[in-house]
Image 1 (spheres, rainbow, N blue to C red):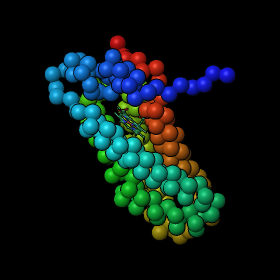
Image 2 (cartoon, rainbow, N blue to C red; image 1 turned 180 degrees about the vertical axis):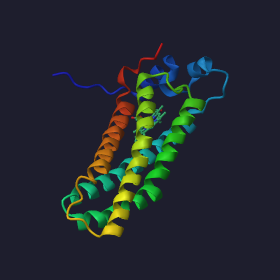
Image 3 (cartoon, rainbow, N blue to C red; image 1 turned 120 degrees about the vertical axis):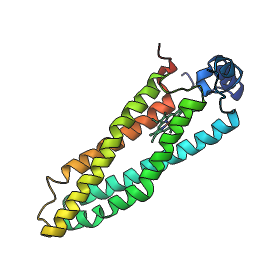
Length: 194
Ligand code: HEM
């Protein structure tokens, strides 16, 4: 049986030095730099820690809203009670974490050799982000509309089919965020785009 081998710290550092885009820093990265000052390895580690933390908060907040919505779809009273939390969670937690995650993405593009679209997996992340932004806005909008309608007309007999759209949008966001985490970890084939 073959055992998976974990590269040592020295091997990882050597690989990073051969491929400047691997870490965005190191001597080879400096040589390959495009004239702009690049972030130091220490800064990169700090930024990556923050990136993982904010991405986790974004995903965590989304999972909470998704679970609250999913668990109350069959019960209009409960659905409306939990839906009231959605704009709060989005505005107080999710949007802030998403903004910092995206700003760090910009940081990677400007101040590291990761660049913006040098790797296909990073291009995928940007494309998914472009889809995520209207999905997020639309979720808040549709849930807000359901809450307003309930205020005017009282609690409906069923929340279907109105709740189907925000629920589908929340599911898409969750799938996209999981995919973004996975491509970041696996960095598929690490090849550069021509
Ligand atoms: C479109 C904006 C984004 C860009 C440009 C971006 C860019 C990057 C880059 C370059 C790395 C590699 C850092 C390194 O290894 O030194 C990274 C790591 C990571 N990203 Fe993003 N990111 C973005 C958005 C996101 C989002 C939305 C999530 C998930 C919610 C996410 C989750 C992660 C995770 C978990 C890692 C760590 C992977 C690992 O090192 O094992 N990123 N990101």
